[in-house]
Image: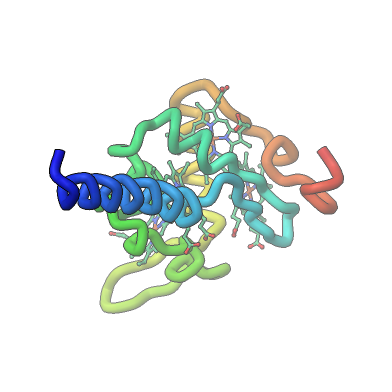
Length: 127
Ligand code: HEC
Ligand code: HEC
Ligand code: HEC
Ligand code: HEC
């Protein structure tokens, strides 16, 4: 191996490792969805892992691999539904219940009852 090849290889390895670290920080592990009915804790990494990396679009509308394309649902889904240019954007409650509860129901796996998802109090101290 020439010296320059070795340097290039070391550089590529470093960049690859760095991109993995960045990917991890950009796709959150656990997400606490605060709302008036009680915080819902989503094991984001666990759900993503079960579905596989090609299936991020099951929840996110986008299916690209660029983490920058992943937005918070609340950027568009507000507490009340919004009508814009003839399109109705469902409320956060409608969208999440459809997406989350809908899959649990379809797969007969994962919580369906209100209090299994909505926890009162601090999600970090109460179970
Ligand atoms: C079970 C549904 C679900 C799956 C599957 C899923 N996500 Fe998410 N993701 C969410 C929710 C819900 C949020 C939080 C949105 C919010 O705060 O409004 C989120 C947040 C994110 C964020 C942070 C956005 C921000 O600006 O804070 C990124 C990045 C992200 N997801 C990437 C991914 C990637 C990449 C995959 C696939 C490997 C994936 N997600 C799979 C539901 C999901
Ligand atoms: C950039 C804006 C935007 C973001 C971000 C967004 N949505 Fe949506 N969402 C929409 C719009 C617009 C519609 C209505 C689409 C239509 O009626 O054709 C919609 C519709 C939906 C629907 C209803 C689909 C149906 O079949 O009726 C669900 C469920 C949903 N979104 C879940 C989510 C979840 C979960 C997230 C976050 C992981 C999210 N959305 C992020 C804009 C967004
Ligand atoms: C595509 C299907 C799918 C979607 C979408 C989905 N889930 Fe799940 N969820 C599952 C499955 C399957 C399990 C059961 C896993 C097990 O038993 O090992 C589960 C389990 C859970 C659990 C129990 C703890 C755990 O992680 O095992 C919670 C809480 C949960 N989901 C919340 C949510 C929320 C909140 C959303 C929406 C943001 C959501 N899920 C969207 C399939 C889904
Ligand atoms: C699979 C998990 C899950 C189940 C089961 C579930 N919810 Fe939710 N619910 C959510 C998520 C996620 C949100 C959206 C949180 C957000 O806006 O960030 C939500 C939002 C809501 C909101 C809107 C709160 C606000 O501040 O706008 C109400 C009210 C609500 N749920 C009531 C219920 C009731 C009542 C039940 C039982 C019949 C129930 N939910 C079952 C996950 C669930």
